[in-house]
Length: 241
Image 1 (cartoon, helix red, strand yellow):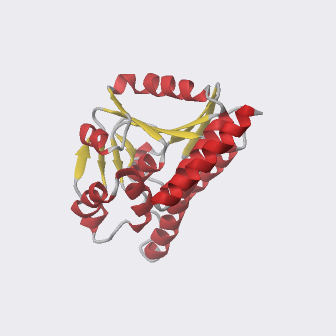
Image 2 (cartoon, rainbow, N blue to C red):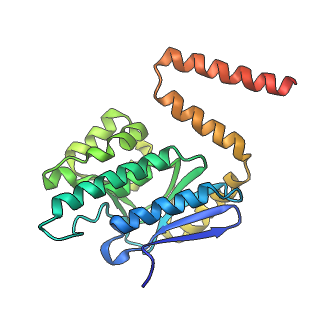
């Protein structure tokens, strides 16, 4: 039986592939646990500087949480457990010490869109589609609030949250969900080119930069400015030694 999440290492790059094309790459309990495990394994590997999240198949990157998992009798418990799992997964990606790139082809819906928003960068194909359909099903995707708001800002996020509609690749680019649009046949190479470029950067500088960025995002403006002054002074003192 094929693994639901596949880990591969190449050069200084780790690849985490969602491998459930038969269910539109939806994430169930086991897939989420495997995802966590591979993220941790790659973070502890000093030879890996960049992590790429991708998926099997060409039609769907990730359709979200697998809401069909479990029986009708324990459906509420299943959904709650899955929701906590993906929230923790988004948190792990957003706090990750290494650069995380999403390589997206096809539909990225619900938690699939959350993975894109939580990542540091994203390359998407021109046929990619994004959306948060949960409101159309009668519930609100509370677990997606943090990554979507931080990635897009309140106004753009609200449109996705409350409309339940879908946007194409070019609208996603204009909203800040992606860094680049490519044709499907160029996705793998474009992702690899970016990953290789980033993998050559100093890992300690990357780690410090990511921590500083995540800290500033949560700060009041004036405190954030003071914090950056302190960081600049530390760097200057380091080079003057």
